[in-house]
Length: 303
Image 1 (cartoon, rainbow, N blue to C red):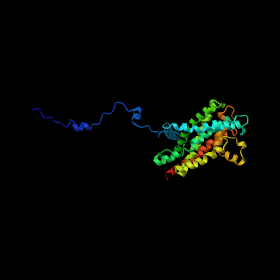
Image 2 (image 1 turned 120 degrees about the vertical axis):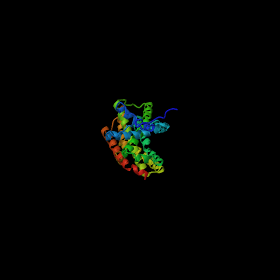
Image 3 (image 1 turned 45 degrees about the vertical axis):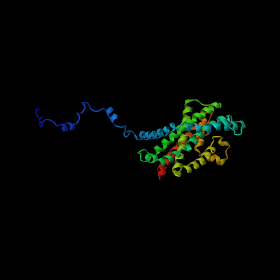
Image 4 (image 1 turned 60 degrees about the vertical axis):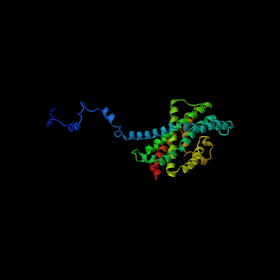
C-alpha cells in the first residue's frame, strides 16, 4: 500500500497555493504599459485644450452623420446652380442692376455662395429637436462638456456642409467664366468667411429651435427668416441702390458683411466696400455673442 502523504506545517496546501499572489515583475511598469491598460485621460490638459477637444468631438460626430447621407449635399446644390445659371444670366442680359465695371455674374457669384451657406445653416436647428425627441440632448447635458462647446461644435459641423456648397459654387462660377482670385491668402480668407457665416446662422438656428421646441414651428419660422436675411443684404444688388430704411437693415445683417468679404477675396478684381477688417470683426463678434446666448438657452430645449 502507498504510504499516506503527510502535510507538514511547512508544506502549503492546494488552497493556499491558489491564493498565493503572482510574483511581481522584475521591472517597474512603464508609461507604455499604463497607456495600454488605462483609457486616455484629458484631465491633465489645460482648459483651452479640453474645450477644443469637446468642440472637436461634437463636430466630428455631426460630420459622421453627413458621411452616411452624402446625397443631401447634392440636393442642396441644385438651388445655387439654378440661381447662377438662370437668375444670373437673365439679369446680366437686362443690365437692370448697376454693378459698375464688374459683370453681373461676377458680382452675383459671391452672393450666391453666401446664400448657399445661409440656406444650409438656417435649418440646422431642426436636428436638435430630433435629438431632443430621441433623448440624445439629455446625454449631452449631463456630460462635463461646456454648453458653449456643444453649440460651437454643431456650428463647425454646419461649416463642413457649407464648404461642400462652396466647391459647387466655385465650379459653376468657373463654368460661367467668372474671374476668380486663386491666391492662397484669398482662398484661406474665403474658407474663413464660409466657416464664420455657417457657424453664425447655424447657432442662430439653434437658438430658434430652443425657443419654439417643435419641428412644425421651427420650419415655419425658418422659412420666414430666410428670405428677409437674403434680400436685406448686398447678395444680389449693391446697397447703394437700396432705400434708406433697407440700408439700415442691411448694415445690421451679418450676411452683408459675409458677402462683402467674399466679393473682395473670391473675385480677381473684387473690392470690399466696408473693409475686410470690419467684415471679419463683425462676423467674429456676432458668432461669439450668439454662442454665449445659445449656450445659456440650450438646456431649455428639454424643459
